[in-house]
Structure formats: C-alpha cells, structure tokens
Length: 324
Image 1 (cartoon, rainbow, N blue to C red):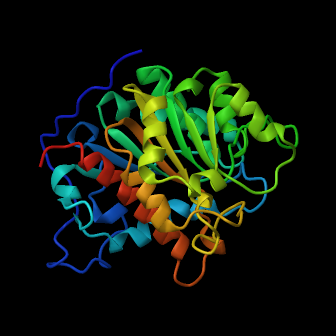
Image 2: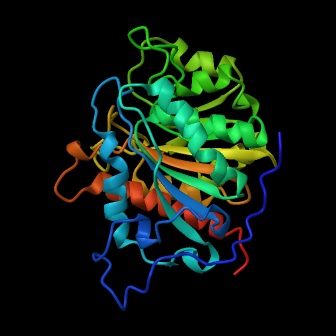
C-alpha cells in the first residue's frame, strides 16, 4: 500500500473562455476541458468507459460517456451556490476513453485497472463516466493497488452485492461483492445508500449488512438532513481514502429515465446534490457516474444532463479542498 502522490501541476488545464467561442463549438470533451494524457499536469482526469454488456436488463450505457460529455458543454466554471471557480482551483483534463472489450466484463475490469494505473501513479484523481456499474470493479482494483483497501461511498438504487446472474459472476449487479471478496474495499469504512424497489429476498440487503457495510435505504435517506448523512459517512470513512460511486438510478426515473434498471420513488436532483455538497473533508481517491443509457432518454437528454451535472458537483467537491 502506498499514499497517493500529491499532484503538483506545472500547467493549468481547464475549459476555454466561452465568451470567445460558443460552448457548443469544438470537439466534445467533458466541460470543454482539453483532451490529453498529461496525468502529472492535472488534478483530475475525466475518463470514459463505454462498456455495457454486463447489464441484466436494458443495454445502452456504452453511449453514456459520449452523452454526458455532450451535455457537459452547458457547464460554466463559477459554482454560484458554493461561491468558487471550479476550474480556477482545479487543473482538469479529459483523458478520453479507456480500452474495453465488449461482451467480456472480466477482461474489461483488468483493462480498466491497467488504464487507471498511470493516472493514479501521477497523483491524479480519476473521474470516470460509465458505462454500466460492472466497471467499478476495475476502478477499485486500481485504487486498492495504489492505496490499499478503500472506503466506498455508494449512491445507488441497488447495493450491487448479488453473487451472479445467469451463472456469470461479473455483472453490473455483482461488482461490490467481487470487490469485497478481492479485498479491494473495507466494508467497515463504507456506506451504501439509496437502495429501494423490489428484491429477490430479504437477504439482498441483510447480507451486505452482515458483511459489515452500512446500508441506508432510500426511504431512510430521504428523511435524513444532508448534515446527518455526512456525519454517518464521516464516521465510517474516517481519514482514509474513499471512492465515490454514483449510479444515476439513485435518482427517480421522473428525472433520470434513461438507465438500465429504473426504480420508482428515488431521490430528486436537489436531494442528491445536497448530499454530495455535505461530503467535504473526505480523502476522495476517485469518482464515477454510471448507468446513463442514452437510447432511453428523451429529446432533451435530461438523464445525461443530470449525469454531467453530478460529475461537475464531484469536481466542486474537490475544488473546495483546494486553496483559491
């Protein structure tokens, strides 16, 4: 296990001035940040993982990174609520998409781990755009290799701790269980929240609790003030590194219909963003936004817009930790 190096960018990367060129012009990168692989020169690297053949119901999240990038053109640098210029505090690049193998989730997890290794070695925080949720296994392998078992903060309609689907152990409903088995996450430092909807049995939530995870159902989460949620996360995560995984299906399908396995009675966007805002002071080692499935979105691409906005809130979370 090693400490994450401190990035000391010699160059500042961020979006161009939208007063000089319209935001809808140019090649689609996240928030119009430059596309390169100068990992040491960046605080954050946005990376797409266009993989979706570990889904159990609706495919389409292979197009998620492109759709999120497209909607991210709307992002401006000044975060009015937090009172800070996100891109003045952070050097951000778009590193493109990692190599994946369609139809092979196990091989793709190894490719993700290898693709993230140089990013983490440079001290750069990866912000991953999925892709189905199976990709988090490769992310957690890379994080654990760099820093040892990490805490996991999950906002998701599903705990993703099932053992297998159709006899396959590498699926979008199984990555947290695989990560636990491989020693990549510390359940005592992890909070899984937002779970709702029909299950196969009571064991679907009882088992992860028995393994040491804290599980907060969506019904309970909706009743928590953001400060109370943050207190529970801080009490679990402590001062060690933690990975934040956001499945877009934690939002109610009224706001995010384009996802693989929608469940009613989810969070609204204001609730989700307020929970994220409350989580300052954590040693975040990585982030992801997964399960945006553009083929099921409407003409306004509202699900992709929410995905891009959540990714921006992750950047803002990191920017708050930086000196202005």
